[in-house]
Image 1 (cartoon, rainbow, N blue to C red):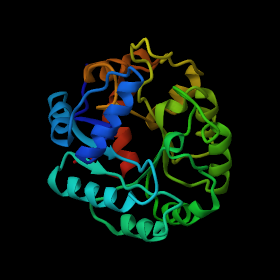
Image 2 (image 1 turned 60 degrees about the horizontal axis):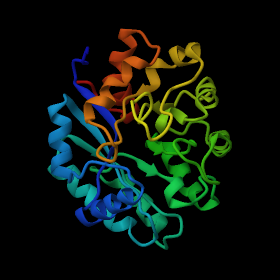
Image 3 (image 1 turned 90 degrees about the vertical axis):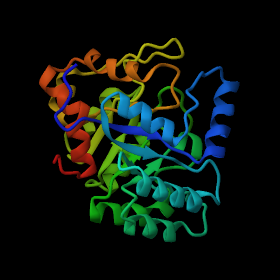
Image 4 (image 1 turned 180 degrees about the horizontal axis):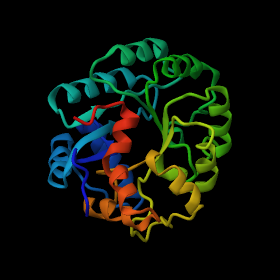
Length: 276
């Protein structure tokens, strides 16, 4: 595997405080989803052992009233681990929602926002979120969203929600997780008109029996936007080894030169990081 000179960049890693990690693991066990039980320090070791030199650390509140503590935790991770670029989180039902938006944008250790409407159960077009979108668009502050229908769906995910959002905020810097699956082409075609929209490869083209992870899409459109496809692993909440996430990348119909960018440079551009 050709690794980029600056190392592999993983744009989709989950970091939680210990008790929240354990609650998430308990949930997955009820679904027969054999995820890896690794705390932050373990995740850092696993990523480093596989050549990762930078990773976006993601978390999200499953309920109201915990975003503040999660953001403080993520700040502490950013202070302790140079490997991670922690993302902040919010919940629109929180009374201090706007305060947390301002807090994250001002923090030197928080580098974006993560939305998981499948779990958080909110509409990405909720008018209360406009304050966040306006500020993020103005400053090109990144967002990562799980807004596709893979591997399961509810009324809060699907390209129709994202299409409405990006029409209202056309310059928003946002990465759609899981290649936008299962609406692969719909998200790719939106990239034609929105140069700040990216996709990550998380859990797509991996070998698993839990769901159909195969990428089905327009190869010409994928190649057209190859410089905005970023590697993501979803570690540690996946039922396969970390190497399998890396091995999924050559299964995309992309030339070797483009895959080098997928492994690193593209995510650096999304994060607005220097390659040096």
